[in-house]
Image (cartoon, rainbow, N blue to C red; front, top):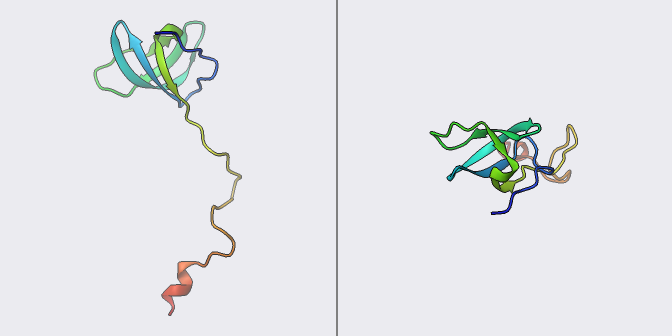
Length: 87
């Protein structure tokens, strides 16, 4: 399996790792330079807390749509339920 580049992996992302034949999923806690990444395994019974680039098999980025502070996803013309309760 080819190694994954660690450039795009950030804290909060999920990675699938294979360390000494043991495959597990983990949440990335941060970078562990120069060796690799600090991780927190999702599965029970895994004690690895550091993985290298050669150990990372897959990567899922935890990205979302950026939101402005105080903004709501409600259309301004949408009625509230408060109007319907009074009838």
